[in-house]
Structure formats: structure tokens, C-alpha cells
Amino acid sequence: MHRKAQAGTDYVVHLRPSGEAKIGSGPKVRGVLEKALAIGPVTYGGPAMGSSLSLSGSEILENVKDGQALHLTFDHPEKFAQAVGLIASLGLNISLSVSGPLEDVLGVAKRHNLTVAGYQFDLGQILSPGLPAGGLDAGDDGWLLELVSLCGHMRISPYLAKSLMAKIAAGTLSPAKAAARLGRPCRCGCFNLTAAEKILAKAAQKFA
Image 1 (tube, rainbow, N blue to C red):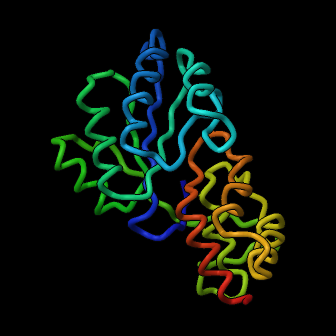
Image 2 (tube, one colour):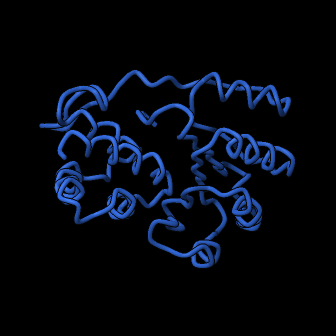
């Protein structure tokens, strides 16, 4: 996922039907989403069904079909742990993967007596022209990498982010509303609004 958000605020659960498991997976995935909403994902959805950043929960539920992946994004480690436990308890026979700090992920696996079948480590990003390396403390524009990496498909425009940042610094736009505007192009539901708001609020202090 190549995400740079701060630990403790960014966790993604991925439910991916594949092979024969795609057959009849729609009702299973829909059931997971209905139950997981009670836990409180900050965003959710999938490329085919749409995301909560642009659609209502009922619209997304109606869009769920066999073979579609579901992504649930959480801004707290306990909610993340509850979601993994919920999915594991249902015995769906559907592939489950997660994105988050390794220590937290291993802790959740141990808590729910789950075996980790494989790991993927973030080794960095291939940056677009003008997009700086580093994070919030890497110069005036260091916050951009943390922000745009919240969408694994790189649908977040750094140019729009800079424009919205100017409005935040001028006091005409809140970080929360800016985060919602930025995340709208993310169709998979992996853009973490809470993390984005914190990044924008902290970065805005440099421009105030």
C-alpha cells in the first residue's frame, strides 16, 4: 500500500474473493460490510462497488456483486482488531489481508489465533515530478507524500492538495472538509479521512 500515515491512525482490511471463492461471494461480502459498519470504519468500499467517500452505505451495499473486493479503513488499532476478529469468526473461505504497522498486525493475528501466510514490506515510492521524498518534517512540501500515499492507486492530486492547503492556511476551509474533497477520487475506500485531516492540520501550521 506504500502508506506513510502515522502509526496508530491507519489500518486497512482487505477482503478479496479469488478463484472458486468468487462464486456466491457477494452475499458474504455484503454481510461482512453490514456487520463491520457497527465497528466504525472511517472509510470503506471497493473499486467496483464504489466508496463511502462518494456513495451512501446503502448504495454501496446494493452494488456488491460476486467477486468484488471490499476494503475497510480504520483509524484506531482496537477497531482494526475487532474487524479482523469479526471476519475470522465468520469462516468465509475468502482471502483476508491487512495493511498496518507490523507489530500491530502480528498482535492482532496472535489475539485471534490466526496464521500469517505472507508479508509485504513497503520499500518506498516511485515519485511523480515535483513530489518530495520524506514526510511531514521533510521541508515545506514534505506533508504531500504522507497525504497522497493514503490512496494506493495514486488518485490524490498533489496540486489539488496544495490548493486546498492555501485555503486552510487562509482560514477559509477546515482540514476535515479538505480531506473529504481530496479523498473523493479514491474508489477503493482506502483513503483514511482521519489521517488526512491530521496531516493537513499539522502541515497548515507551517503556512499560517
